[in-house]
Length: 456
Image (cartoon, rainbow, N blue to C red; front, side, top):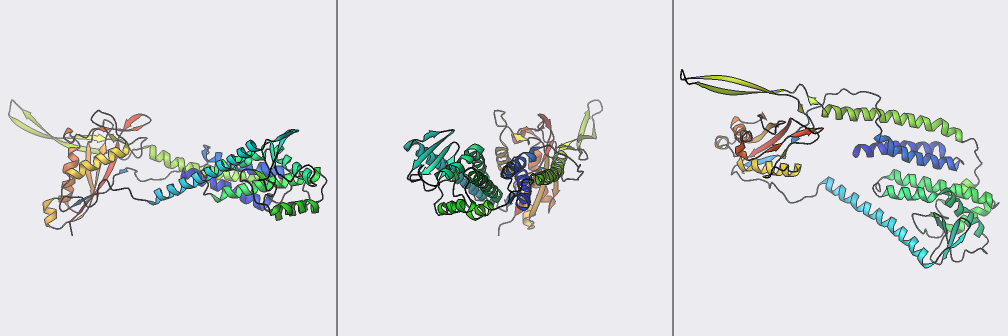
């Protein structure tokens, strides 16, 4: 998800920067609207496209399952609880803030919808050609939503600027601007924290008003000066709703300036020049990032071919005819230990049902904590430190290999090994379901850090 959000913001940021730099002051309002909507759709879709233009060959470290550090103290009691009370972490704090913001945005959207429903229920609209008009004393400034125009009670057909306002709102209705605003508000629920979404909303609302102002002024043959005075008159009115197209939509200054802007009929050439360049550059960037991302994924998903473990067991045979014992070394290899399989090894409950990852970790840690003891010789010598152990769960659900990667003392190493060796037998009463890749069982490994610390 982080990968998707980063790419979405990179793409959208580049599109909006190009819009601000090259297109925003153009009078090709329909082109500008299409550009902004395409920018939004493209920014959402492109992170999911399987574009690959380069290949990445990198050497990645083994990704294994790292268990929570286990702390053993001098009295064989825990320095910290294995199941600590829930504590706030940065991730949980950020998730809570995001959740509250999403709830706030949802409530705001629902409040706007409720306001419109209340208006329609209390004051039925009267139909005209292709649209409806509704008057209410609660409405301070004209606005429209889909096919309905909402007007203040005093703005009637006898009002001098009635025709101008209706023509303005009719442009919003014909162009279906409400769909754009509704789409933005739905995206603001999960992305309420993103400044680019609010900037995109401002640009869309602005181009909606530019388009409506230009057409209304042309259809009613109103001069820019007179139209500007009407805008200023309604500028002091409070906004009615965030999900509607309001006549006094700010910024008024930019709208008045655009009324006097010379037309740029050939401005569409900019789109043919800049938009394909932007798309090609972003596609190339996306392809490179996807290649890196998929390169990491493919390296992680491949079996670690060079990581072949050989186990050696001493086998004693007895010859009944000669009464002699012979000792031999039996070797076995564990090949293709996966760095990050689709599913990790999990323990089975007493009914043979696989536990969840969290339940497996808890049960395993509890077992290890219960059985690992502080070696007396190490304790007497005041030896402390971290023992890093590793064990493998193979594709049969067995534990064929355990080893110590790092340790401050052989005494502490043996304390950990004694317990891990028990995992290789049924005495531990811990039974495994192996890791899988594409539904097939594979070998995987666990890293276990055990900290030995004497009491103060």
